Structure formats: C-alpha cells, structure tokens
Length: 128
Image (cartoon, rainbow, N blue to C red):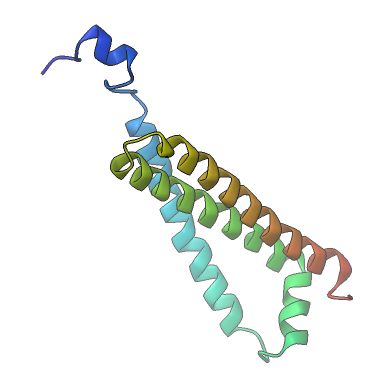
C-alpha cells in the first residue's frame, strides 16, 4: 500500500504518524492506573477505621497525597486518550474539533479540581 495521494495528505486524510506514540502512552497510563489503583485499594484496606477523620488523616500525609495526585493525573490522562480515539474514529464532521477541545477542557478542569481538593486536605490537615 502507498502513502496516499499528495492531496490526501494535504487534506489530513493520510497517516499523521502519531498512532504508535498515542498507543504507547495509553498503555503506560493503563499500567500506572493498575499500580496506583492497587496502592489505593490496599491503602484504604489498611486504614484502622473508615470514618471521615481517618481518611482525612491518611490523605494529609505525603504518603497518601502524592500517590493520590499521581493517580488523578494518570486516570484523567488515560481517560482523555481513550475518548480522543473514540471521537477521532466516530465523529467525522466539523463538530469533531469542538468535541476534542471540550474533551481537553473537561479533562484538565476535572483533574485540576481533584488535585486542588487533595492539596487542600494535605496542606490544611482537613481543617475547613
């Protein structure tokens, strides 16, 4: 198979040569999600109680807050990569660009809110 016609490449109908990188990053985030979710589950299981004060005390420590922030980053990055593929594969009109922009804004905003909440708990010790 050829690389397509020149006009096809100009119109963006040819290969962008980004598929392998995207695939690799998605696999890396999947692996980090697995490891960090296992950490999260085992950390919660090791808590003495499951009340609000115990969870806040756990999340106030660096050993709780830093991996939790890494988990949020990894989950939202993986989420964005996966939905980007779905949008690119199934959305073929002009709304595709809008959907991709909204996806990026949503992912960044939600990850930012989650990280802000974790940092607020970590730095204030849960005090309101």
